[in-house]
Length: 267
Image (cartoon, rainbow, N blue to C red; front, side, top):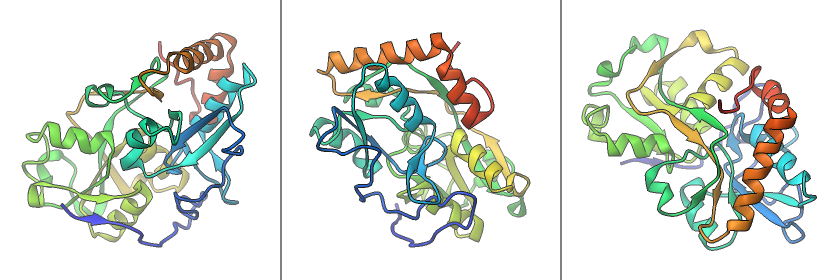
């Protein structure tokens, strides 16, 4: 398994995805004064990322702020190493994981999950120039994935789908998807296993949808939910009640329309 870190490159795009490092303490609130600290990967468009001025923004940022505004709960956002998210939660560095966090059986052993608020799936993204337009054509090819992602977990748990055929029977791991896209665009990897929500948003915003193949994978669809410590019943109830109230009063749909052009709330 290869691990690529700190490429130090910034995408020239509508959004500066990696301009600020994940270790910086620029948040929507003051960590010391906040009632709740949300941990996130600050390069995951459109859920939580940095805008051109380096400020945190995104669908999950606005959704979390709206949920806690209902009870005047002060919330702050802490960029973390995504591969250490459950450790950060259980060490009480943060109170919540809220950043396109997929609910999986493996993660349910470590954290409690809120009610799902959005669905997602895993895609294989390849360059049109590669002539790779199916899973089978990844035989002997190099694959990239984000370390600690649900896609990489599925890749390992269902090896017959993709793992068994790619070069080295493993993926090159990246700290963030924007680093992985840089390598995909430059041809250093042949394919990228990635969340649909990130891939579609990134390619649409950068007007590159026609340059890439978005290939369905056999992995099961996922639900995005909020991760809470298993003993924090009060906070879990506040999150669930808030999500439901926002769906009932139309605010969830309003935030969804802003970021996705449609209401992504669960049926």
